Amino acid sequence: MNSAERPAAAAGTFAIGGDMPVTRLGYGTMQLPGPGVWGESKDPDEAVRVLRRAVELGVTFIDTADAYGPFVADHLLRKALHPYPDDLVIATKAGFSRTGPDRWVPIGRPEYLRQQVELSLRHLGLERIDLLQLHRIDPEVPLADQVGELAALQQEGKIRHLGLSEVTVAEVEEASRTATIVSVQNMYNLARRDAEPLLEYAETAGLAFIPWFPLATGELARPGGPLAAAAREHGASPSQLALAWLLQRSPVMLPIPGTSSVTHLEDNVAAATIDLDDAEFAVLLRAVS
Ligand SMILES: NC(=O)c1ccc[n+]([C@@H]2O[C@H](COP(=O)([O-])OP(=O)(O)OC[C@H]3O[C@@H](n4cnc5c(N)ncnc54)[C@H](OP(=O)(O)O)[C@@H]3O)[C@@H](O)[C@H]2O)c1
Image (tube, rainbow, N blue to C red; front, side, top):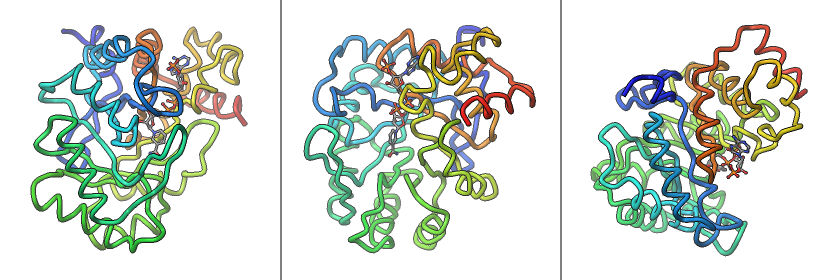
């Protein structure tokens, strides 16, 4: 299959942890479960098509979590793609319990993290998780105990690499005293760049930076939204510009746009083929400021 048929490859690759190469433009599964990221998908057949199409388009990095459904996204992943292609990296998370639609409660007790990693292995049909991210730091539990349990699972061969989610630079430094951290995942998009210091730290330390809400939950992809005029001028869609901007912002950036639709997926993955020059990069930033 040539690069026109696998457009995600145009984004180039990043080696997570130095030894796990992925296409820099990935896919996130959070839009696949029901409303409030709870329960079954409203269209499970389309969800399966989205996942298979992502891989066909060259995506080799899929972000998921036990908490999405819970386990609804993981069942869809397994149904759509198991046995998984050799080059596919599934990044998952543990550290949130779910008590209802839109309700997320951090739990970092070691026995809960261990349970969720074991359940993720079972639900995804994996022997080892390539990248396990602590979904949230539980403020009630010492960070060394949370990361320490994940490091123990890593030593047992159940996890390859460890990452963190929604953290500060100080928290990454603290966690790194217990285990090797290879990635961070924080909210970051053209319109919300509070995680800039963490991104700069990731660049210096060689960590993957995985921006969640890369489309500002769709606000940046919306027709008539803040990127609509620039998109018309560029002959691209607003979501493509939002994603192309992220890819250009840093070589350690791995956006994981979420969608429940094949049409939107194809639109998003094509962003990998868009090059922005410095002027266009600056214009997009001004468009949302
Ligand atoms: N670590 C964390 O705490 C955390 C938190 C949130 C998310 N995440 C991860 O980050 C991923 C991305 O975040 P997200 O999915 O919530 O938000 P997002 O990627 O910023 O935006 C998704 C929204 O945009 C819409 N959309 C996607 N592509 C579009 C297009 N081309 N045109 C128009 N609308 C489009 C989707 O609707 P349709 O379904 O209709 O396309 C959906 O409503 C998640 O899937 C998850 O893996 C992590």
